[in-house]
Image (cartoon, rainbow, N blue to C red; front, side, top):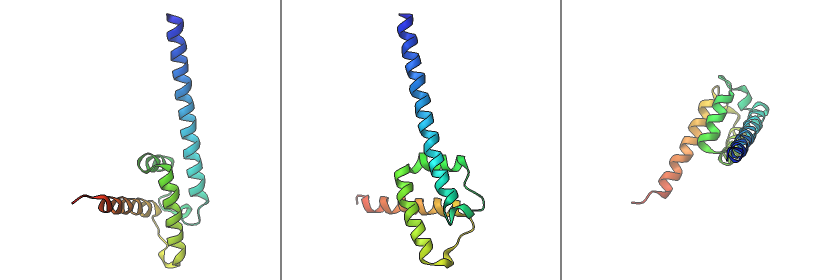
Length: 108
């Protein structure tokens, strides 16, 4: 019985390590995108790993991918829209998106 428990524990630990590895790779890809972005890379304060992990956890990577594209188009459409704090801009944008979804789906 002890051998079976040991095997199960090893499988669990291996799966946990694999999930952690995939998570780190995902965060790395988002960080690379932000660092190479024409606007977000200029942010003061800069985007750090903890901030990006929080964005992914709260909004999800697919939502971020889509909304980053929308933000980029919106910023490119008018050069006067340059921001100093893109972290705040991103959070405000995503929160407004959530408010719109809530209002559209709210039952009266």
